[in-house]
Amino acid sequence: MTEAIRDHGAAPAPAGDGAFLSVRDLRVRFSTEDGTVRAVDGLSFDLARGRTLGIVGESGSGKSVTSLSVLGLHDPATSRTEGEILLDGQEVTGADERTLERLRGSKVAMIFQDSLSALSPYYTIGRQIAEPYRKHTGASRRAAWDRAVEMLGKVGIPRPGLRARDYPHQFSGGMRQRAMIAMALVCDPELLIADEPTTALDVTVQAQILDLLAELQQEFGSAIILITHDLGVVANTADDLLVMYAGRAVERGTVREVLRDPRHPYTWGLLGSMPRLESDVDEPLRPIPGTPPSLLDPPSGCPFHPRCPHTALVPRGRCASERPAMPEGRGAACHLSPADKRGIRFPGGVR
Ligand code: SF4
Image (cartoon, rainbow, N blue to C red):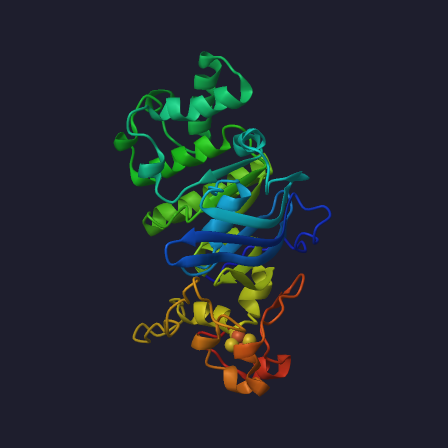
């Protein structure tokens, strides 16, 4: 993991009041043939304008489901969303399609992981950026095209006037991702959700895209949610960090707080499973033992207990029987005492 940790020096967004996005006790369930999947189970967080929140966890931890809820994209026929999502004071949960359409694009936009399937192969890049702009602003075709070319220039596409006439297959992977960012930013959204925006790219292009997001955030002042399984990505890019496991938040704080003083055994596991610059090249990576739980039938108590090596330190079998509370603000959902945590050296530990 890179050692550079972004630090704006400011505290995390205050709970509720003043946050541009406020999520409270979000629960998302899906009906399947095998039963009900509890994809998100009681999640709360806040995000202020101009800040970047990294949401980190393994596949199936609920991070992408959470972001789709903020966009109001779950099909009510197969899913049930409960709790409160306030976006600039507007309730998203239960809002009608017209309200959601207005919010998408103007207030919130998303960058998807797979630019090839998110962009249509049948239309030029320029047209795909210009169309949402026309739809949301009522601009003329000419003005929307000019805006698309301007956005391609902003995201670093050379000769944007010419390249706007290309089709997605004529762009490299990194250029397509830049085009997706241009498309997401064309209507000046106040919240940008980037779901694994660099996973499909090689490391150099990854760094360029993350730098670009940070620059554009400075320019546009947007809030960003950065969803990733890679703590190295958030270390450089995010201000605040939310670690998710089995549909729940298990640790939160500023990036600096969580990476310098991680307090949850799952976060220790994520850190221990990452390559570190200073470690011996022969030192094996240590994946977290076991697999994430089925969300059809999540474990009782702490959802991490079947994989946690520290349950013996917690008396009366509480790990398996009692769900640990998630504190507001900086903290972790774990029954271990602070003294016990201080005594544990975890693999890849930074203490
Ligand atoms: Fe491990 Fe128990 Fe803490 Fe869960 S509550 S992370 S099982 S020690």
